Image (cartoon, rainbow, N blue to C red; front, side):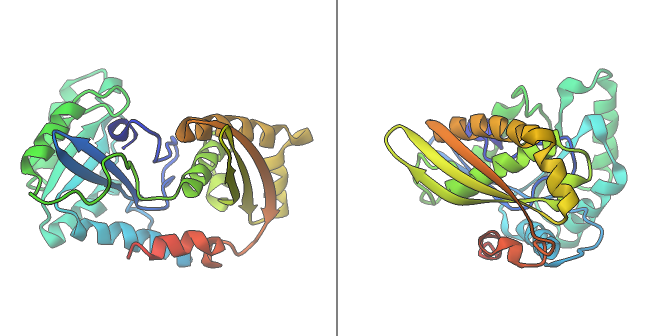
Length: 279
């Protein structure tokens, strides 16, 4: 998504289940507008609260709404059981789907690509199987060309210069949450939410105030770190990413608050409303 749009609108982390929302990316190529939707992973075993239920429902519902589905599988970390659930959902609705084998730049033994292609083609009748590297852009032009050829003839749905349908304050909060995933230990980021409470701008810079919500006092201490160094590190990297997104200097203030029931309490109101509005 980020390579296609030329801008970071979908956060990236080595940890699974980073994405919580359907993130829409809008690309114009050869007088054709392509609208991509990056969904959360469809392998949360059982929704534990209202937030997780909405996340899973939104991702599943998107499979039936798109003109074409792109199933992207990382070849360097292939997990048959995790992908089987998605393939079963595709079978249930007999959905038009292309298979994208991603991260081919990390695979030393290229013969495994052919083996994996064969294995997955036996599980589902994909329209096509493409091999790509979303980091380096290998195969992306070919993917776009194929999508342009099969796109429906219709007016553009969005202005030509728009790259997403999400508000900037939401994208800014996502970039801070990305840094939390990258910098904190494995289990903690899943217990954290980020909300942009204040978003102001003038001719030279943006002023943002964001609240990081955690569920326990002990988690707050970890996020802040000794002498505030962890929070400072998160803020520094997030500020640089947000400035790149907004194209202007950014002043970022971060606060950490304990809210034990945030996953079930409307995901702090606005964010859950944003999710539900996609239904």
